[in-house]
Image (cartoon, one colour):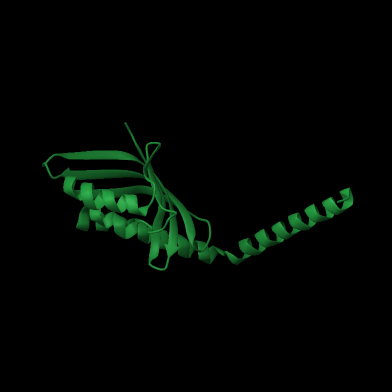
Length: 163
């Protein structure tokens, strides 16, 4: 391949990439961003209510049941996939924690596409244990929210606890 041919191929690929990026950006409008923010806000609000109503089992309604799901906490991987989360919640967490009151504070939502957004918020969580003891935790939460055929779900999450 000659040097000129190589430059032509690189120029073609770069031009194609730029055009496709501009086309994708042009199709995601300000109204789309507003709709995504509203959907993700509803996800956060519904999560808070469901935690209070159903306890820890409610998480499974909001985690995306996909191979892409994972959750980390304080720098460690807690759940590598949905099945790991499902097993832990059903077999351990529901036996230990009877009530959760979760509040997201100063929620930030960054729409990335019609189906994806990032979110972050301070949180306060009160948990009542089966033993009768309780604890309160404050920290910061980040997640990727993804629009599925079952609505907005958490594709991944990370919790950082304030010490």
